[in-house]
Every structure is written in C-alpha cells, then in structure tokens.
Length: 178
Image 1 (cartoon, rainbow, N blue to C red):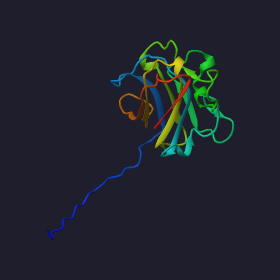
Image 2 (cartoon, one colour):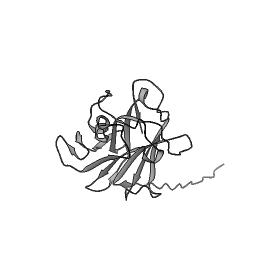
Image 3 (tube, rainbow, N blue to C red):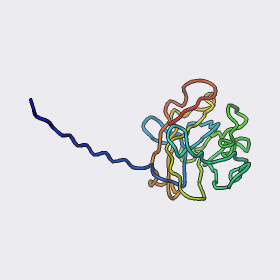
C-alpha cells in the first residue's frame, strides 16, 4: 500500500518498406511456390491502411504498359499466361466479376513461371493494404503470396508483404484483402 510503480514501454513503429516491383505468386501452405493455376480478375495496392490512400497502379490498364488516362508509370508482366485472351494487364483493367477479363495461369509449365507482377517505373511505392479478386472456379492455388522487391530479380532479396490464404474457398468471384 502507498507504493506506486512506473511502467515504461517502448514501441518502435516503422513505415512499410518501399518496393518498385510487386509480384503475386501461387504458394502452398508451407510457402513453397506451386504451379497451381491462378485466375486473377483484379489486383489493387494502396499506400494507406484499410484500402485507402492512393491506388496503385492508378487508372485503368489497357495493355501491359498503358492506361486510359494519367501517367504511364508501370509495366505489367507475368512468367506465363494461358493465351492472349488472358494477358497480365487484364488483372488491372478494373473490369470486375467477369472471366472475360482476367490473367490466367492455366497449364503453367512450372512453379517458377506462375506469377504476375507490376513494376513501377516512377519509383518505389510504400504499400499498406491491398486486395485481389479471384475467379474461384478457375483457381486451384490455395494461397497467393504478394512479394516486393527493389531490384526485380526475385532471387532471394524479395520480401513477403502478405499471403492471401484459402483462395479456393467460396464460389464465383471472391475478394481477399489485407
């Protein structure tokens, strides 16, 4: 009685790391890359928490390196796409809930080629939240990992930003967020 104690806590808050390259790839529950197909209808990154702030890439993609309006500050690519009808830019064209506009890795030859990525040519982006929409009936990948890289090599220097889990659950077009 009559005694008081002081508790001091130190909290280190660090900003999200910034990357110029972002890659989505299929992984199993152990984090190993897989050749399980992904049908990615949309992918969006935000520099604010809770899907707020600036959207990246901004605008509506019309090819792997062009958009309807605004600055052309990105290059979209993939290790593989099933056909020209499912090119990588289609996951960034803001046409939601249609399999007529998605990137699809059906028949991908190996796990190393099973990815889609965006390079921001105007500098690194600090991403705090994001979302993907998958066409569940055409996706076998149980998990999709978002990775960031400053070099674009993805040869061990990349960092995991988030892993979307249970990407085969649900039906139709399923949105996953972080």
